[in-house]
Length: 346
Image 1 (cartoon, rainbow, N blue to C red):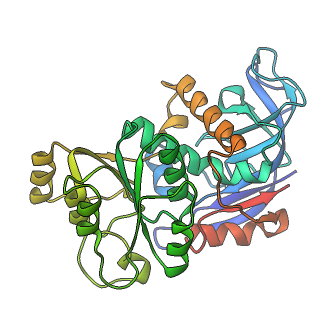
Image 2: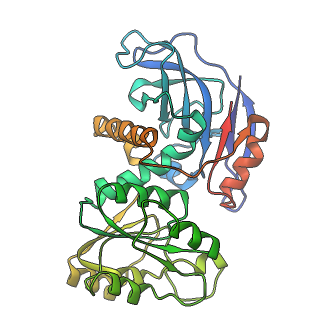
């Protein structure tokens, strides 16, 4: 049985991805489920995070968002039985690669997959759905009547945020990073209140947001990265909002949910946040599997996400399935951020 693994490079070297032979133990743990994997989503590997939590290995398993069919269950498993279709995210310290034909996983990391939902679709979108759910419900405490600004709404994560917010009666504003993405966002149903272009060199972010909110600002901002310094850089960096712009568009008591790990706030930034009684939350979806403190809540979230996908409330952008023999090249592309995500069909 083969799986995809990462060989971390040095401080400067890029990590290498290799296919390795692996085996499963003969006996299942009491609460473990043996799953035949049908599809696996590939997301960038955060080697710094793994190092921070003390996970250091010569070969790091790659591919954690999995969908498959239960083959066998442990003696104390109560949630599943053989032939159940399941979906889940392998924990950070999982010894198995999600690209193996068969994996063993604790039952508390899996939920039932609705029959009408394809394995490729759910494996490709589960992580983005979890991020959107965590940002809007857990951190921002979204409620009907709130106003939300989603940066780069045409991204897979941004699209999940928009659809989830619209479902709950939230007024949504978003930014577009190209004319094609602008057109795509304007044609979304349910529709967003305003699409703000940021690709033409000058951003009208603040005046447009103030116009749409009666000069009150938005209740929630979700970014896809932040520009910390006003300086020249790559094109993708130039499209990112400056941290001061984000703070400026926040209303009183607003929530800023950021994916930027190394965010630095200067005293004037903190002063402005203090005046607005606003908060900054860091979005790290790994906390759900890194700690078992809220395992039941995590499973409820996963179940709700797949049910909303099945019902058409969440409609992720379709990912073209890639065969296993192209997994190494696909993962290298994802790790360099040349592509947001890839889905391998087994």
